[in-house]
Length: 435
View 1: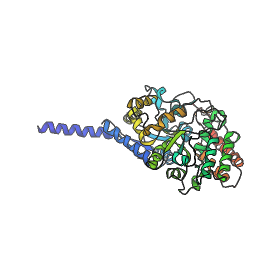
View 2 (view 1 turned 180 degrees about the horizontal axis):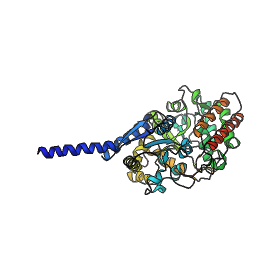
View 3 (view 1 turned 30 degrees about the vertical axis):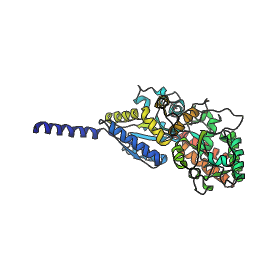
View 4 (view 1 turned 135 degrees about the vertical axis):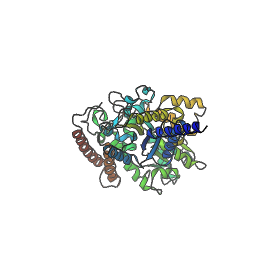
């Protein structure tokens, strides 16, 4: 008996060593309810099998996670998996720090991924570089309770209808009819995509590193000037204008009646409204006379970093397989409002009998928005140093909102500064080819 006990103990010790050897790290940049959902998935993966163990480490933000991962790669102590946000796609593709996920997992049916999620993270030739993960897109939110108080019974669908509703709300004494933060993702990227407008030449950089910005010449420029004018009229408030000091918090508290925001903010809004207000969520608004195109995928995807042994790569692949399961995606959508990324999940939601449940309110809506007709200019954004460009765009447009310059002058300046970044990136990766 003693011998068998010792043998069992030895086997357990060997198993523990094996598990230690297969320990892998995943770095992510989310906080709040999304971080909780990610940690829940990590715990579920570890509980579901014993061959691999994943440690999921939050970095506080996408930008910090990106900086730390590249620094760690140079120091050769980087994680196996890194969650990277949409804006850093080209930087990471050309960094030589990652291996295309399709190369490591060639047998996965990648065409099962919804087109909107896949297009942003695949090469010009169609190879997927990263596995889409927490996918969001832009949606339109209203506080139906407040709208109905002002006599508005139909949810606005166009910008013209939004402003008409905003004037009624203001006339009824509402201090904040519509709110936005003026973020690049919302007012430039998602606006341009659904209106079929280019942000830069060369189809937003997909056709070469020699692209240049053109957003200052499109309808996006007119829209941004409209936001300035509507703000002066008291119809639109930026986050900094609100009592809450944050546009999402202002909407969730009932201070503002309408907002444009990520599908990933749905769960927080629904929870805040519970028992107080009725929430509606619908497609992001269009200007009348424009054909609707797809919105971009937001959020982030997961990359496999180079320089790890076979056991670690196997663990990474197993975790990515786990995240792809319909039941995992459904739980993540229900917890966060992020949109499922594979087509089979909508079938699973339908079969669950809960398709009309509020917890899946953003699923079909978000997928439908990303799968609207696309053009070569609405595939995604493939521009270098784009994280820095987003900051430049915000700096310049905030000057216009502050009355320091006209919006057109601000956009012209953002284009000039952005093009300088593109030329520096082109020089840095001279001779590099987009895959």
